[in-house]
Length: 364
Image (cartoon, rainbow, N blue to C red; front, side, top):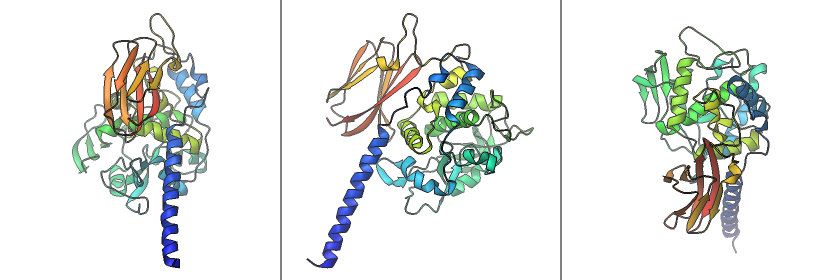
């Protein structure tokens, strides 16, 4: 055999091996779980006390290297259908990790709001929970402006918009992401306002541009809080977020709790502030743990068993697309998945204000 032919076969074999290993690693990440007792200190708390308990649970984490972020992005922000492509929430452009020169490492909450990469603030500066790959021109247009709903635009690429805010309470310049990512951005803001509530360098001004403020509670200006709650409610947690959250935890050793338990937001800032938060959801008669919800893969059917029949459920593809949704009429529901494409899916069950996720491989 010629050396050139042997080398070609070696390259093909190595490519297959690397592809196989990439598949294995991605699936290991997909099936990561919330550590036991990670949120145990939150039990029975509400509003400001609950927010501080969340802060204490997540503030200690690994300090990642800002210069090495593209290495981490290859794990956290690759498209599941093509891991060589970057998942850019700011534009529809197709960009590959092999040439990411048109993208920036974007701070979702602008780093200038808390003082940038100083020694005291270096953990926030390289926090993967707040950093996403973003089209450079869109990043420049966004600048250090807050999230808002935009009227007259200075930039509109069909995914993101920059321009004059029409959000009640703020009339300056703002940035509006696509509807499908508005919840992602809102939950990132809630995370930053909580994880770094002890920072004393958060900026303020008379215009209200700096949405996150000094102080342990509420840490968000009223106009901004109304907007973030609205976007959080209209765009529920996606497979993209849960998968990314799991991977960030393996790298940084902390999580975004508002992805794990979206209802925490309501107990801290929203419509449940008069109630104490519990990881054991309750109805009028019984207390149930999320572990009481059972999802069983029966091949052509997915069976969901819950403590009571008042729950809703959805199925998402690994790309984050919702492929099925319904509400339960009985405590045991069977979903026919015989027509689904072979692959990994996320089953989401919502009961008593809690969200339960389980990933299943459907092989038909």
